[in-house]
Length: 358
Length: 186
Image 1 (spheres, chains in turn brown, cyan):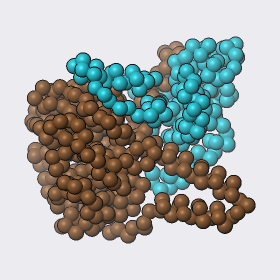
Image 2 (image 1 turned 180 degrees about the horizontal axis):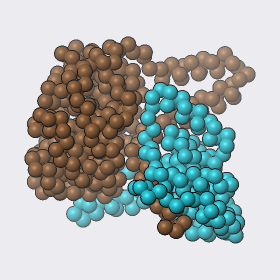
Image 3 (image 1 turned 60 degrees about the vertical axis):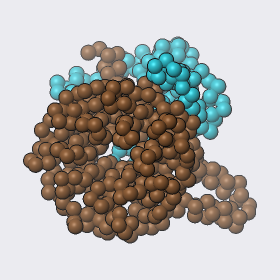
Image 4 (image 1 turned 135 degrees about the horizontal axis):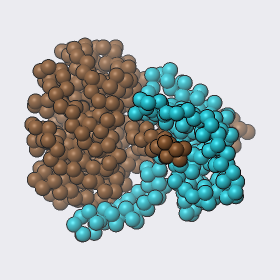
């Protein structure tokens, strides 16, 4: 291979190495840096009036401070009963009635795991960089980030049923409800008719950098980081595909529905918020001390996956953190079903089966 | 780069020909979301640091944001931010700062989101990093931007002849230094 061809291949490899990089998280970090820079400049300019500068600094910092949290010790969530090797860079997991499914971003595949044997029984090639899974209408839906498509797989046979493009931006969130499959693709809400696999881009008049998506209380809920700051949750009426209303929120991250409530992850505040599914009113704020990446509801609890490797369990009855679990790498997704908690373990490219502590 | 206007047309076309009023993000935000991973990749290639690549990209975009009124008026905003990233990535002081931050993160068991390269590709970029600074920048921008020599010169802010000289010297050095690829590379 000549030098030019090798250079181009090495360039493609470098571009391919960043498929897990999250520009949205990067944007939040950028905003934090900008705030820090501005604070530093302001402090320098006010050096002559040091006392005033200190007051300003403390005031600004104080508003960003995260409440220290004392959680149950790691391991209190349960014990590992199986470690199941899956594909490279697993990033999402979901449970349906027959199987556990894992999206392997580094391999462009979805693994089907049989919970009876703890083995991978099928590996299905989907698009490049699958990042999100959802189950609905007898199918597994896969958001392929780099390829900007959504794959639909027959949950029973593993056959690929359809590949649906999201032409302007890659889909990053999926949700099922109101007779449709929903996705966030960049700034657009995508609605897919499961009977025809046709996608429409729902008319939008909001500006959210996507954070979360769920369907609850007869509305589609979208959360996200605005630029700059936190943006109210937008609720879309599925009958009209129009924005129904907005809900004030302190958070900007992932959404989930469970226990009759909507749950939202606060990234800057490292807190999980419980919201009334009808009014959107805040019912509880539960500090967890880490940045939540993924929320899922099941077994009377909310389960929180993180990039720091900690999984947190919140009891929906008490709104208390009742268990934590720590993996070596990242734990970007959690699912519950078949009597177990299933945790994506990126450090070992594995799916962990955990027997929860009752 | 796809502009918000062209993206609006694309979104509209997906709706069976019926135009939809889709509000799109501010120009900087849109630019950022489109370009960020590519700039991370460039920084990774030029630093070899999975942990530090995002840090370099962040800094480059922060500078773009700070001067956005000016940068937005450029024809090639992406080229501008890549040049900044390439400068940062090849600055010795900057790299030491990035490595220090990366070590701090790793000590907290933070795992980089950038995937490691296969041996042959890693060997190529290691050889590029060993080149003199301007040569390394010229090679990286040449491949990453897929630009002509003329365009690369415009991005680097130097004469075409200078870029040609950088690239020629770099190629000679790379051809001399790069070993045949390992047979089980991929």
